[in-house]
Image (cartoon, rainbow, N blue to C red; front, side, top):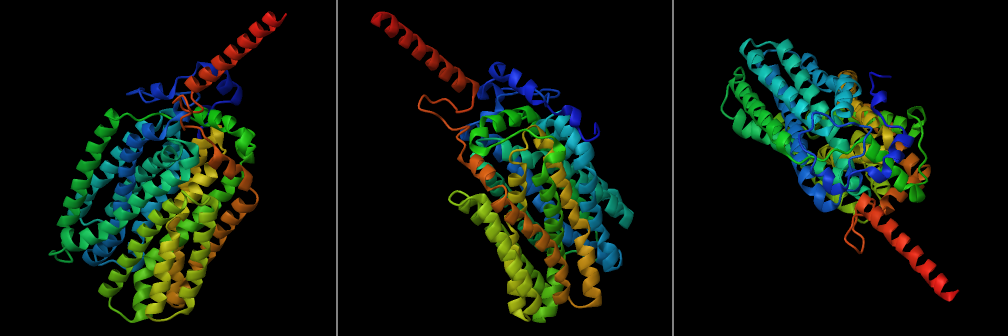
Length: 498
């Protein structure tokens, strides 16, 4: 259990003992350049306001764009390597296996340990440096035209990005008022979707516009540029004002919200919602990647169009995915996030089933709508599943990120089904994954509704009439002072009456 970071988690008595001695949210924003941050200590970041959280969230949102861009390049590079190295489609699928396989290894082990031991800032820096090293490794891999080298480089890139995601997702979800958690992560991940759309467009029109199919020179320069950018970004993160939200802070916030949510501290082995979320996320991400990996081949088979025209259809589908994320973020301001998740997952189920039965351009349209409704699922499952984890928030988050490794399994199964049937019938594999994931929002809307709605009603991080943030130590000191003054006035009035 030490490997998974249990010893880095605070106990509730430890947290409550620090309660009236904890820093304020202003002090939380002033804590810079620490070598490490004790995950058992309160930092004051449990009551950050919207204004305080805007800059660090904006900076971290750049990371979402970054790995969205990297993921968008994956399919393009897959095809490029396949042509230049004369390898089979099945072997080229090893690139996706290398990328998503890193998610299975990193988050539950070294990535999760780093974020609990040293805090978010140093996890961001570590993830960026690992990503940069992986990007640099593409240069010798291209020089020696080594497919194994490309897989190894992509595994290192995936390790860096999984480390970033292990820290970025919970950071966005917890940095600011808890009632806006789902909205913040949905909006930030919308920029990841933009990166996924931009990458293949730039690849086809800029990076590889006038190169021979056998030429990998532009691949080398592309990743060299990415490496330079991420190393520069690591320096920026060292100097940036990144507040540290510890598990102790999340435990305090959960205790402060317990009147609304019914929160009771439980050991990790009893976090059943989290375990269900990991299974749902694994199946959902696997199904999503399975659909994306076969979209072009499906379009060619269904609409009888060329690969180039099918790629254009896929670009439209990715555009719908990005639009869907912004739409879901807007909906979450007026509709409960658990309802939004249920609505979007219902749309996924309807249109993936329709895509199996509809031929022609209509089938392509059905699959494109699947991409639209997929948009909000990952970030919403993430934020809803860490609600109420308290002192287990960082460890639970790393498990959900590890579930992204489902992307290494489902594309291969979908491709295998397509080899033995056709691409329409092969969509039954993603359908099964989506069906398992669909059970999770049903569970949330029945079993967990009271708890989730309580967090949405919380006022922590919002200003009171005196301009103090609710939940902050300054706010509590002010309330205690007013109570003391009121008792003094009552005592004086009682003496005068006697």
